[in-house]
Length: 421
Image 1 (cartoon, rainbow, N blue to C red):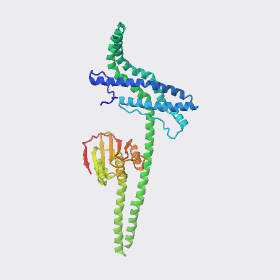
Image 2: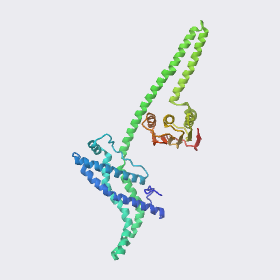
Image 3: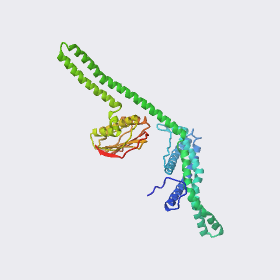
Image 4: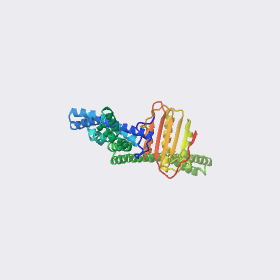
């Protein structure tokens, strides 16, 4: 069954056909619903207007706790409807009131710009919005009302009105999509974020992600220093001491010198392995050799459970983004092995030249928490590149982690390849 709130694709005149007629009837129904919602909007606007001056007394606090949550529910409905009509999501952006008492909560509401936008919308809905919504209804119903009047009370007045209202149907056909879209745009402008607010929030997000990226980089530098100090550096120092002792024993005890040189050679091999391990932690060689898709396949083959791959990634990705995606996916698969209790997993990857999208899923017990150390680290790693992570993990499973990283390049994509490992 078609959706009751179809997206308004165009406001241009369309040919008269069944689908266009049904769409206009639905939009008129939307206008009727918006017009009816003007009644609670007017009531809530009056209650809110009375609540703020009385906020210092108990009655004002009570009115605020009645009006503000009800207004939030009403505006949520309007945001949803306008978003469906415009084909986009309209956010609210309310200030956080967690941990507040009734008095401080009212103060937070009073200082919250989003609540004032809600208050402004109440009066728009009861005045200009009501008029916008009533026009399509009036244009469609006027001829019907005049016809009924003529049938009930035949007379020249009703006949003239019916004659004059005939063109109203044509006007209704032409203007209904534009009027409904105009109201949706007005609601988005009032209830949505202003461009300044969006830019401010974006700056805050960038500042947070930059700070976390710096912290992560500093932690990585400390880890590399520790690995070099405890691993390769100690082994290379041991090699130097063994070679020095062998040099002293070479003339007096060649057998002991040979044994020390053998031990030095083995230690050198171990030191090289330590250095390779450090390098793999910085930028895995498999990424340079096989690219991200090949690296993901190598990870999947090492997982002790069936992992199905469906990769559609081609073209050269920026090395930092590629590395971040590799380590994030490695962490996700590690969580599957350690915590999910799964019997199988799957990984899909797509890249359309603008956005890299990786999905990791498993059939485990579910209940994963994005605030855990593993997934929280994935979020921090992705945020450094404006990436996002979405987690769906109901109890009983399945768990699905969706990671997206913007990385526009000029390269295209190839056909998908699916393989089990």
